[in-house]
Length: 273
Image (cartoon, rainbow, N blue to C red; front, side):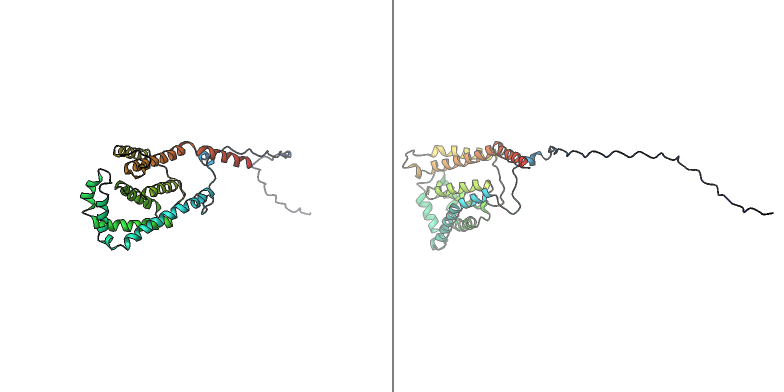
């Protein structure tokens, strides 16, 4: 009797999930249309309205042109201060303050009415240190004008010295130096020299210059066209008024003028894209 082989059949595991029906093939998706450029967010809007800045390390063409235009008067003024300092350096009487004392006596009758008190109580007792300080300041101003290093403080020291000379009655050549120095200060405020960034005046600065111009009016002695150039009061009043007007124009331009050209530049660059 033949025996059949024993076949062991292992129990199969029940499927954990029911079999899924085969899915139909999906239709190919249509190509997506290119998305429209998104509008700039509120945080980027101020940057979009600004004129494109030049690459780092490069000076804008407008500022480079202004630097060249102002080079002759800046260099000429630097040579003028260098000449004044050298004149005092080689003069022995200046080292002993004899020349300064003679200048104070000579200009006493031509100075503004409040200057004689300063001459008697401030300038004459300190004649020797003042003489040395003036000489050193003139060399420092010349170096700053010729190299454009520390130009802003040098300009303010130069303006102060020239205003004192004018108040003492020595109008020429200080009045012409003042006109050039105001021009350089305006150029410096517009970023032509130095760190190439603009600074804007404060309203109180404009008011102070207007007040200085008004304060000089009572001391004006003549309005004759051939004599006003020698009147220190009218010269100081005119210089203060011009400085106030220059700062006022810069302040008005900061409020309203630069925005329109920047907006037009932004729109043109967007159209080119």
